[in-house]
Image (cartoon, rainbow, N blue to C red; front, top):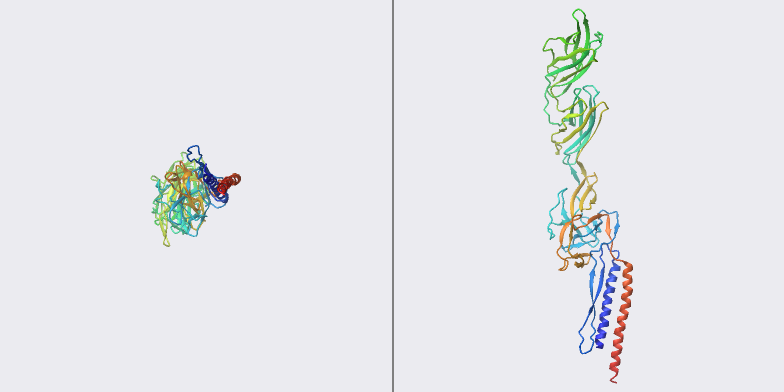
Length: 528
């Protein structure tokens, strides 16, 4: 055996233990580094051929391996941009050199320009995203990636496009009853615009709904003047004669040439009973406001209750009043009986509002939605709105209307939200959330063979396999945890144990070198 070979073996042993101490030192130093993956030193023997009975000592060589595929535990924070991956995969980050790298270090913070950068100075990458539309990725490359920016472009506004209304219109209110409710809509510049929903009862089963802005109708409906009307129902034939007191008062809504509504009041007054002719006589008077616009004597057969006068076609012509033109009122639907008096009037035509019709159960039958027209207000556009009214009812309860219109006013960025599938949403102070990016993820066939680089990042190597792109939560990729960080997978107790072993083994190898050196001295001294 060569003495020099013995000394070289001792040196290789010391070098191997020094390498082990180096990885142990790195692991301990990075035990608090986010996403750090521990290194380990593995030993293999070096055997030299021995001939003629002489043994040639070889030594030991080392190989450093990384536990990149071993997941660490999680620590939770209050920052939504602190990210961890629960499962396989890596974040894609860009360095100052403009190259892309892989990392599990997700301690990203928002920079002044809105980008997300981790503590090592690497910027998080992803794809621009629209809600419910996943961007197309290049599976085996970084083409199409961009820096994720959560600055949000300053103020943000979303114009209104529609809304809904639900509630009850009181069936027991008189015709002409009007009530309104207001909602806020938003124009193209984020200005709030107060819309007024005005409900007017036009008959026992119909209501008019007008949507107004600053007192002006924006339904876009063309008004139609009233030309005809009708009175229907039953008068109680046992009511006493009293020319000073109406036996029945009821109302209807008629419309003028300009679409204005006129509340017509009908009064039925029992004026006489003639036993000889077996008839009952009533006076019908019609008022537009306080102006009387028509009167007609109406007689009934006291036995059958059928109308005997006016003769067919049994009509009353109302005189014009202002924008309300003359109306022809059909009276043929009135009769007498012993039943409770129940009389109603109606008129054709419509104003600028939408006509709502309810059935006998108080359920809205037509229409189920109403619309407004687009408006230009102070240089901004208030979109045409479609308003769902299908949940309106007409029941014997108080007026109770609620509703909403979509859209948001101008607002600044408040915070960032990141979902488990990597969708980055910018949340504005008005509550609006806009998905803007989707975090890209990457993986390789052999993560432990990636090449580690400074800054706790990795690059592809010949042994790692090609980089394959994907999204969090999809096959082969873990979920993203927001407000969480992946801890180092270093076990301090294990590292300290290895450090003690390396120290002892280093000392033992130094003894081999020392002994070989002493023997060499003895051999040299034989010449003396």
